[in-house]
Length: 446
Ligand SMILES: Nc1ncnc2c1ncn2[C@@H]1O[C@H](COP(=O)(O)OP(=O)(O)OP(=O)(O)O)[C@@H](O)[C@H]1O
Ligand SMILES: [Mg+2]
Image (cartoon, rainbow, N blue to C red; front, side, top):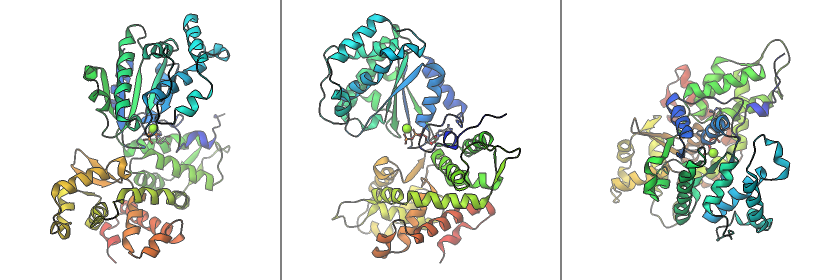
């Protein structure tokens, strides 16, 4: 009998994938595994939001370490609160209940952990770690001591969203990495993995030049079409489903390299069809195009608020600004009617603003901003082709729907209205139906 899985263990749009984990490209994988295997080597993993950084590190760490501890850095988090969070979380390996974890910790270190812990009140970590003011750290809790606690327990420390730490605290945090690095003489697996947004790779080294050769900066790209397809293939096997080839192709196309969209759509398909766990019968359950369309509809209905927020963030400008440059750039990109576009194309389409003194450098800066989390990463830049594109079809579709009717009333009413959902589906469907030799330009005529 095949093992039964719950759907939520298979399609995990908001959690690291374990059962459907797809190995990433060999070069990326080797780079990461080598860095994990090199004593003292610290790691910075960076890439676009949602490209699979956390999932990759969680899966790889499971192969090397007893467990990992993840500290989620929030906007304005301080060095002190990071130390406290790490200290607090490592506590579970030093408490009585954890005698069963299967490895021995030096009793002297356990005692030292408990002594420091006793100097902190229970609320000290949880309440203070969110706040950007300086927290109290017991003087005994030095970076070296913390390193010892992680080293003894063979735990790797992951700092998620490293880029959110304040500047001066970032410098101290990179100092902390240096201490961990130097301690690899005693604990060869002692390591910090910092995960950051795209464009933030140098931030660790920037503050600490000695670390230049001892930090592996690893870029995690968007997933390729075949990697996304493997998520579906892995999932369908485990749940005993059969996705029509066309459905797979469409999910791959709609996902635009973002695995979370793929997981979401597959999860929606299962929930709409009432599938909760691995099918029991002898034959797999067939998934057709109508199932996918329903799933897209559901996805957009749930996401419309998020799409609106992301789009608004992308085009936000100060009140008195003469014209909305991010909007103008996005419109130019859409009017161009091609999936990808260059800087020159955008600039030449902004002639009306050039006469008002708009400079190339300003457009270039704004294009870069539109690719950053500051503006929801609404655009993506591809180094190789030197071209930009929309991050995903949903954001692109939302942008089109905002620009096509200029009535503020309609814009205000967009929220969850049926109209926008229908329009988004039409746009996305048109976009993906080029798989069936659809003439792309058609959606912009009318
Ligand atoms: N290699 C993979 N195989 C299967 N699914 C994956 C893989 N990588 C990521 N996913 C799925 O994609 C989604 C996003 O992944 P993840 O959270 O790891 O991305 P991230 O880059 O850490 O995102 P963020 O920038 O938001 O922190 C999750 O639903 C996860 O399950
Ligand atoms: Mg992540």
